[in-house]
Length: 80
Image 1 (cartoon, rainbow, N blue to C red):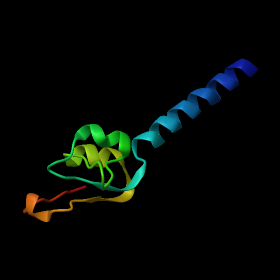
Image 2: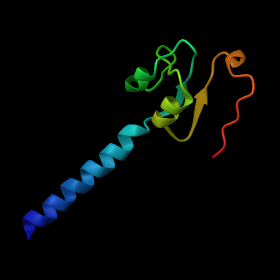
Image 3: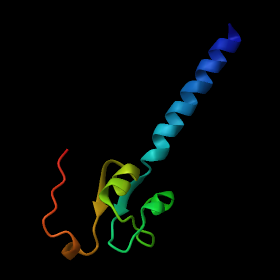
Image 4: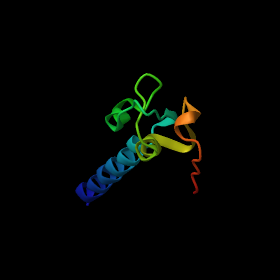
């Protein structure tokens, strides 16, 4: 009985840690010169992502995705 409970707790811990690992930045950056491999560094100012999809994947709820040069996305609309 003890083994089952500890197994369940371990499974919950893994589940919650994997959920938190995906969205870990309040502010992420997207640039035409960026790379989607930069999700490891949370799409920071020095290592921005190239696509909004990659940036949204590491942005926390109520976080923001920043586009330093608005000229590269003149008519963008993101709907949730």
